[in-house]
Image (tube, rainbow, N blue to C red; front, side):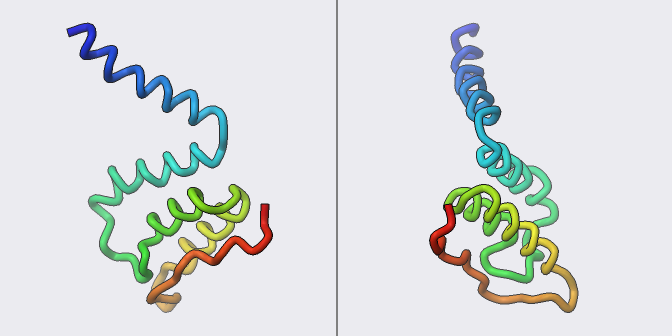
Length: 97
């Protein structure tokens, strides 16, 4: 039984070490946590494709942290009545580090 518990907590320790090491990983973990918890109850209402949370996750995976954060915040703020809608892909990384 103890071995089974240790198998569960070793990846968690590794994940926490990664989370402390970079803000990008922390932000991605926050988005994924939202998708698994609140997104289940609140999801399906996004005006855009991909959904705002999936857009944010892709931004943090593909772009530098500051640019990903700015695009994610802009996207969430525009997802409101009388705001934009439709297909909104992530812009290409054009020389940003």
